Image 1 (tube, rainbow, N blue to C red):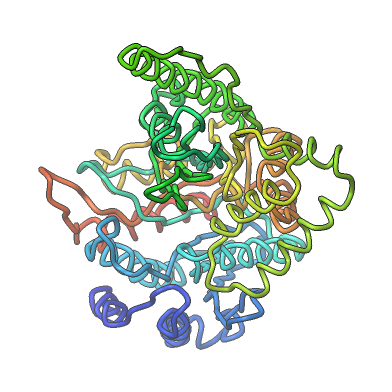
Image 2: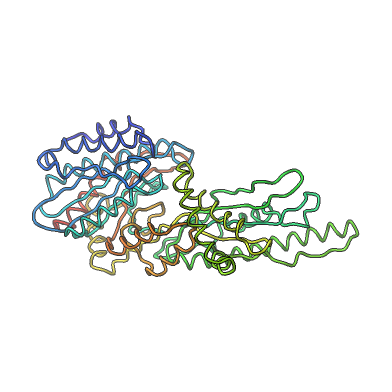
Length: 500
């Protein structure tokens, strides 16, 4: 049997940063390692490198498939092998946790190849968590093909990284993750005559204060509370010492455990409307005090900037300007996607919003346009209401009792999850409607929704973990090298072989 720590050291020696040669080398290394296992030496066709659908670069998911007996029942495991460049958010210990998990999966598959009697186990080492999700998109298409061949997927085990306060947990399902963003076109004014314009910097800074950590935008379900909303980026370019900026932009990240995406955005718009009114009232109050000191007439700002969602603004402009609007946007999006590989989708969508406003606006009035700068990861709710969900929950619970009863069962994995590519909880029509809030072509995302609707695989996260204890990050060897592979192994055996 291979030594898990030796495998871990091999993986640790290789940097697998997204979109670099190292990422491809990591997939090839795993391919070669699996080919050394006795089962795969006898079944080499079950070890694969599956390329993504990207045209400008060659990248691979690494796939290993165990097949025992005649049963069509199957379990899917999805793991991450790429890594970002190190930052304050993702420490070296996080990279260690991820690679220890990959090594643990290798050991678990080796042991499973000896113990499993009936069923199939599909492990996909995905090349893309930190890029543009092309790796997981390809993985979901690959799983759909297997399903069409007769594989009956009973569960998805995903191993995504999360930060723990010291507790060891498994998570059934996942939260929705959204990136609501605001484009604000203000009214430029001389800096000595601020009251003649509307400064995006002032308005957006007020909105940021009101929305960040706003408890009204949190929800609670199954005793789990959604993660608080926080700012990703605030940008107010173009201002000078003589005049205010013409526009500004801010993006947030947030989660939800019970809202529909469309429902959350309606609530977000309500909070945004209140914050905008507050900021205009503040400007009027401050300007009134200025006028009083100067002994000049005070005239309050009466016209509130109008708030639109992306689809509302696009529909209003297209109604006035005609079909040329949608045709021009489609062409612009295609040009940006094809020519600007180094520009991320968030930036492209901001440019799309500004392009629409700059070229087709119907009036020179201040507006706020609310949109999603990424297609959302929708929530997956695992409650045990279906046979498949109940079987998964019972199998994992039984395995926990054997491995370590102190491991907690929780709901809604709080980080970015692959679950939404294989299942969903919301109404399909609501999820499809949410795509209208994202500027650009939505064809690929609707295809992913269709696949997740067809597959409907219940999920649990038994993942890589970095502990934060007393302000210090800790890598837990015992968890990654012992508990994690054992918990996965026992859960899968219970699901496929029915062992207790």
